Length: 316
Picture 1: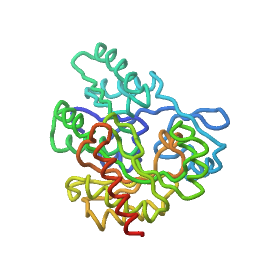
Picture 2: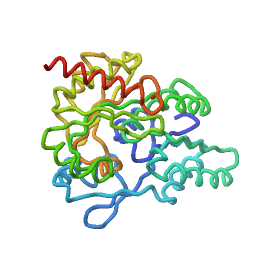
Picture 3: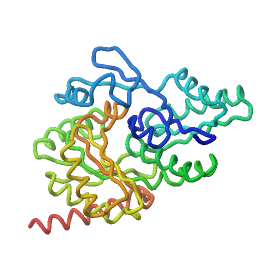
Picture 4: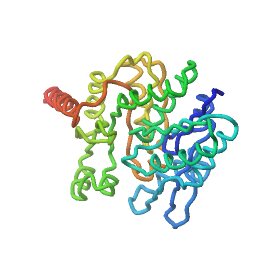
């Protein structure tokens, strides 16, 4: 283990195998509220409920889960555990636009650095969540494995976080209603015709819909074309394909990525409890690195419009 540890929060969706592989010794647990009212710490390894049961229970849109940021006591315990052993701490959590976790970590860090003079706790606002946060965490871990210092890793990921893209469909539109993204009317008729919404991250790190395609066939064509125009050096990348109860389509996307881009590695993973409670079933997306997002996603929207027009022409 290096002289600093990397401690993400439970929205990074890295399972035990991945945490061991990249030497992530711990994580900060948020809170999951079950439909019956009781709460438990979010478990990235699904020991409290299986992923299948979790997403299956939400299929009729009546059973809902809620989440909350990690308690201050949880953050303090995790940071202090390693500070007391003589390690510095680098923490990366879900985007500050979605949770108070980043601000809470900063408050705890300030107090603990006074308690442990000479030790450091550096908090990074990831501007990402779920699998995009996972990609940022393992990027930091790989730079540490190369021998980079804490400051060098922080400088790297502050730039790198803006290069992380997502591209894939959300086909269960009712959870977008829950988040106020679309109306109930649009969700009903969109689901009836098999509408797939495609989104990428804007410059603030928020997921923003930039394309709509009817059916998986056209959606897959659009995903392939979009990634081809926005990815950088795929042969050097670890690319994630993440899903929430869309395992079969995740394999379709993984096979496409392998065929078209031949990355260093492809990892298929499940969206975890921390983000899955808000995303719901129906997401399947590729997470990769490319150029930083343009202002207002102007370039990305124009690209997707061009892709959409080409697909319509081909289908005519």
